[in-house]
Length: 448
Image (cartoon, rainbow, N blue to C red):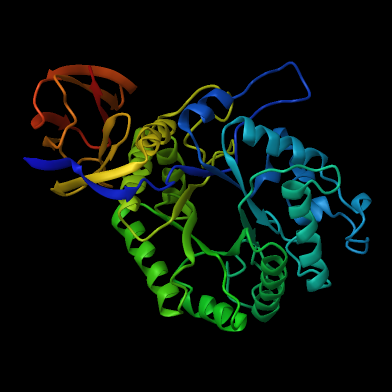
């Protein structure tokens, strides 16, 4: 029997924002066709929505939003003139994200371009001018410039996956210039924005994989004394232990370079067994299944105890890798939605408590606040893994007479449904669960 020991008297620090997403909710401003998942976004309490690849989706605003070249459409225009910018549909999209209860995490640059001819992943003609354009996008959204807003957009990320393929490849879908051109663009933009907005968090480079350490090292070396506020990177995998390994690699890389205060942000991740052939088709099916949901939950829970500052799932945008919502009807939640809701129950309590696991392929996090809460997941990439018998020991329970333990289950039959309740009158007690593979439980101790 596996044992999970939860001690609510042992505080470990803050619950981190591990239930963030790429992209936000769907809402149609221009029509009475109110097909929306706004209420579900709000209930899941998504802290941040990274706006990358947003312009693939028509209801967000399509080709007219977010990407720098779609806002500053004429590279020869005056970057100081409000008339040079088209903010309209991006404004609408960001208002939807705020309605959903999230903060924007802004990726400056372009969406990925998989097609043969590149349009927006070409190096800007004038790197300094491009930095000034980015400055004015920030001024519009954070400081009211050009009939703008005072949104609390803290994170500004420079570009996406410029390291996607080896230098000189004609197939890099994210950057068509040389490595050195990107290093220079990143340095010029980072320095300009950090100098102009010292209270904001400026960083990047949205590394395709932390395995590209040599590429990343040259980027950091090219910065000299300039330090990014955060370092962003990506990983797609099918095993939680591999995700954890990459988190440790990223932190070690930053610390080795003296960037001990630089946040490590994993801002693209999902279940992928491989990018090609049958394995890719299998991965897309998993993303929208209970197995994909368990991978989401297990990764979130494992990340809480790792040297990672934020985790951002790819993707809440309706499409193949969205395991949260039905692409054809976004009001329909898929299994992968519920781990976000369940993790938010931890996040709302704010404080992590000790939760140790004696067993394999089990992941658990406990939290304490207005309620005392635990989320536990059984994940193993082996679809035939046997069910686990688990004893969960609770100590340090805040119990002034009696408490109710509520069991919310996510499995093939239940969508975070309340399936069981028990009353306890002590400060220490235990419960027992049978966890088939890919099952997740939210356990709430409610004071009576």
